[in-house]
Image (cartoon, rainbow, N blue to C red; front, side, top):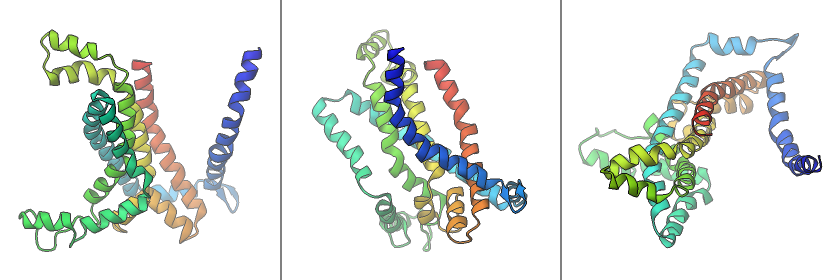
Length: 273
C-alpha cells in the first residue's frame, strides 16, 4: 500500500502537467467543435465533408506524412546501425551531427531550404544544368519540396529511436548469422531488422505525428496552393476567426491520426511486447 502511494505521489506532478497542457485543451477543442448558436451541433463537421476541398487537404496531409515517415525509415536505419556499431568516439561525433540541427529553429532551416530550392537556388539550378528540368524549373511550391524539408527536420527522431534499440542488440547474433552463411544484407534483413522493430515503430510514430501536425515547413515550402490540414486550422484561427470550424478540423486531424496510429501501435506491441 505504501509503495502504491509513493508511486502515485511520484506520478502526480507529471499527470497534473499532462492534464493542464494536453487533456484540458483537447477537451476544450472537442467542446468548441460541436458548439453552435443553439447548443450542440455537428454543422462544422458536415461543412468539412460536404466541401471536397477539405477532404483533399486531409488526404494530402496523411499522404505526405506517410511518405516522409517511409523515407526517414529508409535513411535512418543504416545511419542508426552505423552509429550503434562504430567506436564510442565516432559515435559521439555522429550523434552530435544528428542532434545539431535540432538546436536550430525549424523556421531558419526552412528558409534555408527555400533558398536552395527556389528557381535560382543551387538545387534547382543544378537540376536544370543537368538537363532534367526546363528553364523555369524549380522545386519550391511542390510536394517534393515539402518532403525534402520535412525529412531533414524529422530524420533525427527516427535515427535516435532506432539507434537506442540497435545498440542494445547483442553483436554475437549477427556473428552467428554470418557464420551460418548469411550475407551482410541477409543478416540485416533476417536478424537486425526484426529485432529493431520496436525502435522503428517508436520512430515512425514520432515522425508521422510530427509530420501530420506540422504547418510551418509545409506552408513555407508548399505555398498556399499545397495546403495541409494544420495550415488550414491555423488560417481559420488567425485570419477568418472561425474557431468552431478550426476546432472541427483539428478534431478530424486528431481522430485521423489516431485511427492510423492506434492499430499500428497495437500491432507492434502485440508482436514485440
